[in-house]
Structure formats: C-alpha cells, structure tokens
Image 1 (spheres, rainbow, N blue to C red):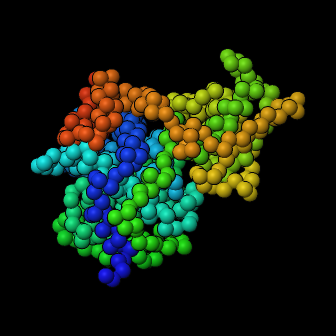
Image 2 (cartoon, rainbow, N blue to C red):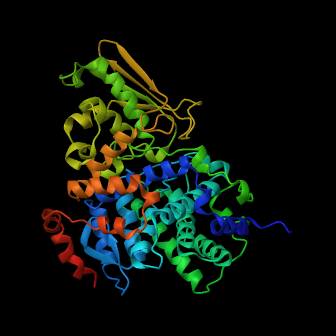
Image 3 (cartoon, rainbow, N blue to C red):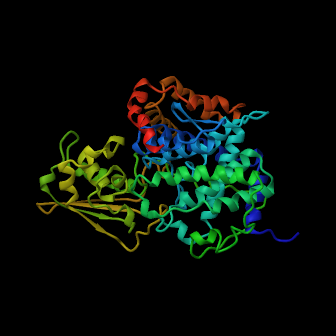
Length: 481
C-alpha cells in the first residue's frame, strides 16, 4: 500500500476510531472535562461578551435550532448555538487547559450538544456517541500541536484554540455526523481556511470569540464537506497549509488504529480554581503562601509596611499587565493576581469585577510590583514556576516558590472539588435539582441511551431574574437591524 498523506492519515483516524478504542482513563478524564466545560459555559452566560454575541446571533434564524445553555428564551441555528455557547465557555477564561498549550474542550462540546439536539436521528445519538466524537475532537487538537516545537510553549502569535480548535471541532462534527473518510478529509481542508486568530486580542472581549468561532467554523466545515465542497487534500502536509500557523512544522502520520494510543491517556488537562489565565495560578499559589507570613488569619495585609514585591516568572508578555483596566486585562495580569491574593487571601469570580480591580489598596500594591525573568523559567505550562518575594520596610523578606498548583495535571482536582466547582458555576443559571441531575448524567454518560436527556437539561429552567437582567440587551437587538 502507498504511504498515506498526513491529511489522509488524520481523516482515516477520525473516520475509523470506534467506541471500543476508548480506554477507561480516557472516558473518565473526558467526562471531567465535559462537566467542567458545561459549568464554565453556564457561568459565562452572565457576562457582557456573551450578551453581545447572543444579540448578534439572533439576527440569524432557521427551521432547525439548538439550545443556548441555561437560556431557554434563546434558540439559534446549530452553528450559532455552538458559537454562543463557545463564547460563554471562554468568556471568563475559566475553561480547561492542556499541554501543548490550548483550551481543548470549549471548541468541541458546544458542537456536539448543538448537533445532538438539532439533528435527531434513528437510532438516537447516545452518550457514548458523544464521548467518542468529543475525544476525536480533543485528539486531533493534541496531535496537531505536537507537530511544532513552538506549540509546546505558551503561544506568541496565534491563539491555539482558534487554530487547532477549529480543526478539532470539524473532526468532532465529522465523527458525530458519520461522514465518510473522503468527507472527513474535505472537512479538515475547509476548516484550515477558517482557522487562526492573533494573540494581540488576548485580554479583550474578542478573545472568547476565538473559541466560539472555532466551534461554529467546525460545524460549517463538516456541513460544507457533506454538500461536496472540496479543498486541498494535503492541507495538513504542507507548510503553505496548516504549517502556515507554525514555524519548524514537522507533521507525522498518526498511529495505526489497531494499536491506537490516545494523547489524553498520556496527558491530563488542568482545571482552574479561579477564572484567569493558567499561568497566574502559579502566582496565586506562591502569593498565598507568602501571605501566611505577613498576616494573622483574620488580620488585614499591612500594605504601608510593604516596600516591594518581586515576581520571578516566565517572560509571557500578554500576561504582563502592571495596571489592568478591565476584567479581561486583570485575568491576564501576573501583577493583579499576586496583589489580589496578597490583599484578600483568595481569588474568586468577583475578584475580577472592576470595583475590585480599581480599589486604592490594589493600585497601591500594584505600584510596588517588579518582575524578573529567570533564564531557567521557560514559558511552558509543563515546566514554569513562580517565585514571589515580599520585602518589608524593616528589611525583612519573605519568599515562596510554586512549582505547581492544585488543579494542574500534576496535582489534579479531586472529583469532589470538580463537582463543587460545577455546582458553584451552574447554580447561577440552573435549579439545584437540574445541577445534580447533570452531574449524575455526565458521571454515567457512557450508559446514556439518548442525548436528548442531556440537551433538555441544558436548556434551564432559567431563574426569573436572569430574564429581567437581560431585557436591556434583548431590547437593543433592533440597533443591529
């Protein structure tokens, strides 16, 4: 047999992987990812960027519609439901992170819930169908990231979910819809032409659109492939194809299906305990330890006695924001997260409200922060560390170094804590009974016979105050027409 092209190898894997290829570890890890992603999505429906994205999407209508999670008052064509849910997931930067660096789940899960609801089939889409397609979408992202050395570091040019997430979304949709090998190959080619968004939009309201667009474009690529649209059949092989996104691009044929080894089996994801860029979690961990030396349990931080704060961190410029002016900048600020942890003793969702960011005590602390970049502190989520030193006016210095944090793949969240995070996030939009039902359904997802049980719960019901809070946004839709 002639050697396959890289693109054909991917299409063969997407088309050929079966539920029997899933290992117990992959199933368990992916169910945790799904639960966490749903929670981030429900919480994200309270954000301004979600409201703007959903208002825009209401321009579009179709006879076939899907649910916007937690919002029974909004139904959209499946491509736009996936878009809006993807935006919600990443709107607070509270979604999972993998290595090489990307947010893998947000581009894939909204695609599958939208398709499962909008395109009912006989037999029904099962939980195992969803798990298989989800893992195919995750796997494609991971394999693509391993083709370039630079992808192993925190990104500098393209936001990875906008690149590999788009192809992972297309792969998941292709698998879920049962596309032929040839159509899977075409969907990948089409998706590459939808891929890519610059890191310049990190720490802005536009960054969550990267996840939403990846989800939306993946569905579009699969639908267009179904209709016979064609692209370059070697798009993943070429430097002028997928290689355009990465320097030193070196693609390889995927493992044989007879002995397939999932990347998720080898490398777990990180789950965040507060909504901010993953690198800031090392800073928060180190700052929490130093704080114990500075204050008693119930006392206030002696700001006036602090002379300077030194952070020894990797050189990641888009997370270097000395005086953040918005919640999105604060989520991408080593300095802010360090100061908020020192001041408050914890980081929570409200920590990123503008009234918290602009407190005089925070601004005073920020003015005392200095950054150092040790040459051994490389910008990789697998190896980076944070060291913080706080020097008082009397000359005393307290230092702590964090090499990892609770929630990183080296120190994973317990199932109990993961479920507590989901409860805290989802209860903003759902009743307690619905929250508990979703936890049980995801826990036993491989045994679910009909995904409509899941998608029905994702609709809500929404608390009455959510509808009233969003009325101002809903009324302004006429401004777009």
